[in-house]
Image (cartoon, rainbow, N blue to C red; front, side, top):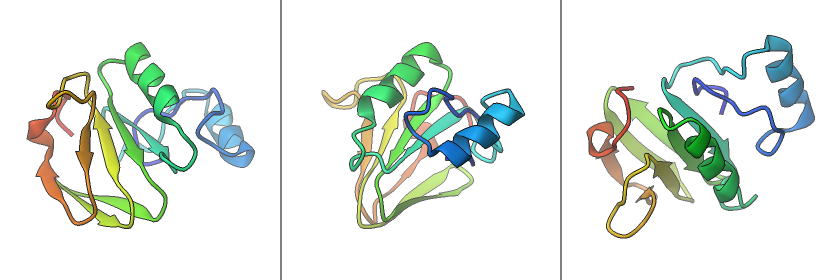
Length: 120
């Protein structure tokens, strides 16, 4: 979550200690290791889909990334890979075969170029 370039400060995605750090920074910004993005951790388990979609609607220049618990999204250049037990959902404002997101399953690999989002 904190690796992203944007972190919503509405409290839906983060615990109070993390929110305190974000608010003290005053920008809503993360570390920016993954540019033009916002990350929702514990995505399916905490039912963060509505909140992530609202963030992307308010900031359409961002790529929304929902990562389930016990799951990691590995980024190497433009290549991405899902490790762990859950899924990763990528919201870029486009239709993906009738779905509003691009879903990656455990072990699946892809490229950011398949998404309608600014370069990472």
